[in-house]
Length: 436
Image (cartoon, rainbow, N blue to C red; front, top):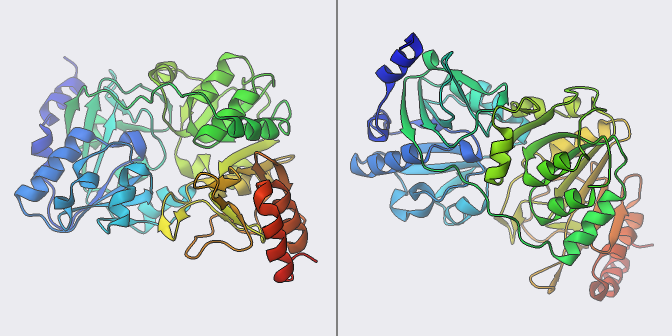
């Protein structure tokens, strides 16, 4: 038995034993998405109630697992989620006042942990230890190392179903306080259903703008998947994206992506985290063509711009005549977060020949509401500003806003709004002396 295995065994605990280290008022740091250690966080919830802990904060970006901290109202006042990106799992807790939201650009998260917030405890789900004593953070790079470096206590949940990935997201057995084990399967998303016709049309509009040799960042959901599907006949594409998904794996498998024309990280697929099918995770396992890196590298506009012809595709919820994009609130309440949208909007436009596309279906609420508006809905948060927006895409076409006046933008946006709203939008624009 080598010394690392001996150290591993000496630091092995149960989730309950790890949870017992947490005290009232502790700041707990957890990596994004699938880096959340489920057994440990469940045990922490139980411990918080049993010991009567107060004001323990569990920081995480984009949680994916339904756990008591988000779902159980009894946790209120004991264990509170702090969301750096609001997703469907924690949305109800946020809107009921049982969880908090941390405003930030995704690229800034590691720096905030290093400079502004001191964690008492760090915990994460990782892949099994190698013979040299290292654990891979697997599907998440983002902020993991930055969180760990400043924490007083460091715990790992070793999960045999997490792939071992390459890049910069590793931790050594000597750096941790303790660990527990789990074989609970890491979340694998079901095979995507058939993409709707409107999303397919948006995907085709964007794909027609993508040149061979471009470097891609695709967001989350039907529309980015449709874009990926429409790019299958392109060649020499590259990937530099905050989120690595099955749509990108499909582009690699069909030969559209080979990363051969990137200026940096050539022949590498660069990402900050990954979510998708078990097939995706198996592809990533010990695959040197995929690198999981910290998000202050992946999402740095200056780094992004070093590749030519970067194409950034993200989603919005509504847009006004100025070109202000809201991508994070509905009816004035948190629905999503800023994430990396602005990071890549900026990076793509700094890139030589780069383009930024923000996509949205033209209507919401079953066709009752137009997403194109004279002004954003009351309480809406501006995600991408009027000065940074480039192209907006709906199922009716592309509005190219860069270099356009307020009046020209309004006309371009009305042209891609749903036809049944165009007359009223034009009336509003003229009434407000916007359309002249």
